[in-house]
Length: 361
Ligand SMILES: Nc1ncnc2c1ncn2[C@@H]1O[C@H](COP(=O)(O)OP(=O)(O)O)[C@@H](O)[C@H]1O
Ligand SMILES: [Mg+2]
Image (cartoon, protein in one colour):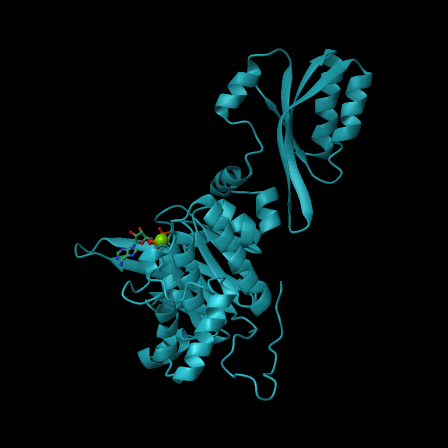
């Protein structure tokens, strides 16, 4: 999605200005990482992981604490090496590369962190300038670039502020500006919004979406929050015990999660089925309760009309419908009362066209 072709810089333009990139292609091929502690006990942090991230894609990698997400990220920027397997960036296996090559490769990779990792002794502008100094960019260009970056992240007036004078969201904006200053084609975000409140999280994710749309950068978002995946990612990979247990488009995984772990994550972001407390409350009343998947052609409306004609009443008691990647889906929970045969017919007919589950007493 949103892969912008690289534009040749027009004559006379600043060759270092922020510009679209084709985005890096990332391929994990049978990556395993085993840590051994001093008692020779082994932890298989990554267990034969294979996955391809296409140029310009935003992928969300989600899993509980200890699943192996940070280890995976450290492989991508060459901060750690796999025990076995290949890791290809734009077709080149980086695993055997010497440190000097890795260092130059890292200048094409931006990284943002949960704790922002800003230099407290440098201003916002100073933090953004730091990687440009490392890249030996001449001073006048550096100044122009820092200003451009501050404007891009919406902090045009905060260049002289020190991190301690900035809010969490502003600090992460500085982190993003610093990560993008060298025009990377890949951005790694490890729990980058986990220290932020929900509103600030939304703002930062919006900024990352803009980064992807306008610059075409491939973004790998590591998170334990499904809401983050839902609002930014094209694809999602669910990690558990060092393996990808589920992978697909955000629509596929949200509308039809296969594994228990994916179902749990999806439930935290959608909340479209009654939880145990709500179910208990609903069951205190007369009638049969059904939860129905609403997708295209689910048959819910015709089945409801027939049930009503045949002497049942239907009340909607819970539900949620959402749109992801231009497709709508959701669930609705209804309570039926009245003619037992009409209720049974309702259940039978929807069993043929969609997923319907009775909430049993
Ligand atoms: N440097 C290390 N030495 C030993 N074990 C490690 C090291 N780094 C991570 N691990 C272990 O690898 C597993 C995955 O860790 P990590 O990648 O940090 O998970 P996540 O980021 O998903 O929380 C955990 O069991 C963790 O304890
Ligand atoms: Mg981690």
